[in-house]
Image (cartoon, rainbow, N blue to C red):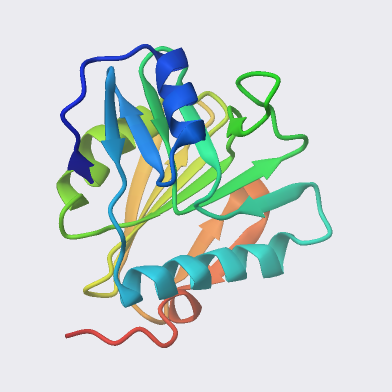
Length: 190
């Protein structure tokens, strides 16, 4: 992410700006933040994760969306474009345009060198406040490692790390298991 030199704006001003923009922009506490392009590994990991989720969830009540879907983290302060979003049941929108999802069930982010600390820190904590979210996957692109945040029945989060190609990511909330080897299929490390 690269910060633009714009004055603080309201969420409504952000949505108008982003809808008219040729590039994707996130909204973070009044700031519009342009999204940077990704690497080949980032794109492959994103597609692998989305493909595996789609393979397991197709035909059911859940839908898998690409990074073209904007997610409302908090109506007053945060909007984002996760790499992959899963919504179960009808997608709920922030307004009548229905281009901003408010009820993600699972979010996947592939970590980038420039945004890694933000994604693992503030952004993950913001995602954890979305009432409908049950699972957050944070995928490293320079080594085999998936951090899985899972919401427990008491509304606390259990965080585990799977760093083995033979490992399995169990997303119980949507009833699927993803093989780490499938997510990292074709990815070459420097």
